[in-house]
Image 1: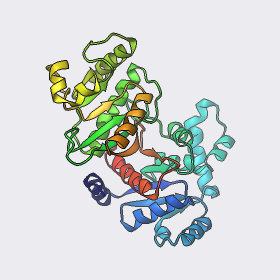
Image 2: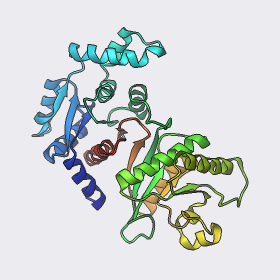
Image 3: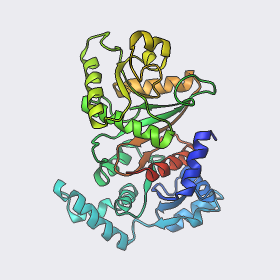
Length: 336
């Protein structure tokens, strides 16, 4: 395991959090949970039928699932308590108490309600559920963090040993997973959230580059104006943030290019957080760096929610889930 994850693992062990896994009989999820419990990284809460979970754990020859807390969504006591909570949260949207009672039987919603009620610290799902389903439950129950209205997805990019880029070979790319075409306000929020991810999870001091096909007015276009305005808004949101834009990718990370294209910039040439102008660019960029440069892409880390909920790829491995749980623990530790 990379040094970054070893550090995050130690931090999680020393500040143990309660993490909910609503896909409680999904084999990869159970395998990851078993390992998390064995390594004393987190207290695991599984949502589902205890007998079914036990049977699946025995089938998979997992020895630690018996130490997890199991919450049955069909338990009337749980259903009523959380139905009342969900009703209060959503009654302004026209939901009835009967609607709420049905909704809390959905493990994704029940997990988020437990977090909302202070009974857990984070949730990891998506091995069996779509991103839309995972995010919908989080939006409706937990909502976004103070000052943030946008949820975005960042990747922590671990570059090959000896790479001159990033801080100790670590960079953060965003948004690569959620917002297709953010406006300038949304892009500014993505930048602020990404800087927090860089500090809290990647363990680096963020130097944020707002990327474009233009550097400091070298081109004129509405898309350039959006990035320039987003940079201004982000600075207003967090005056302490080390951020600059608009910058082309080479000006952002290559000192010699920065000296020519953006002289005097405090960020250009050594940026370690790259904020892309839209989802298409971000998603393509992280995959190209992953494949062509041999980088490890860790994520996506969902940022901007009031409490940590992370979405898995349905093609994920037990190792992916294990790492995502560690990341979620660290998000909970750093929650403000």
